[in-house]
Image (cartoon, rainbow, N blue to C red; front, side, top):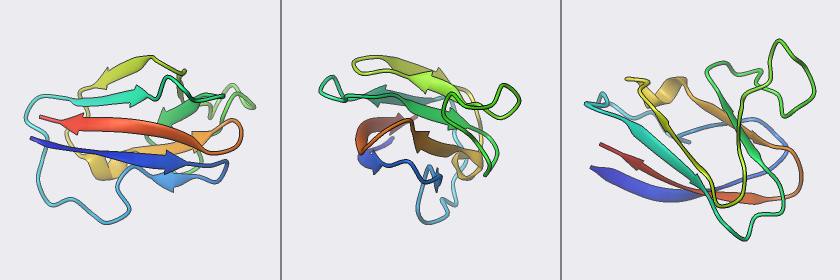
Length: 93
């Protein structure tokens, strides 16, 4: 199991700033910090958007909410916030 936190701004970032060599056996859990003032959007392309384009918008993770993803390669996930700097906590199992 791996876990950590990441601050996400309005510029697109890869879920992991450095490539992860291991595959996910079960899931990736991403939690939006309850104190966040906006949402973090997660998608599987490097052009993911935050509530601005129907064809490229990611999945929103609002403050205090979480999403569980079964993507086997965490290097294929990208994040972008809809405003300011938002914090996520994550766990890979």
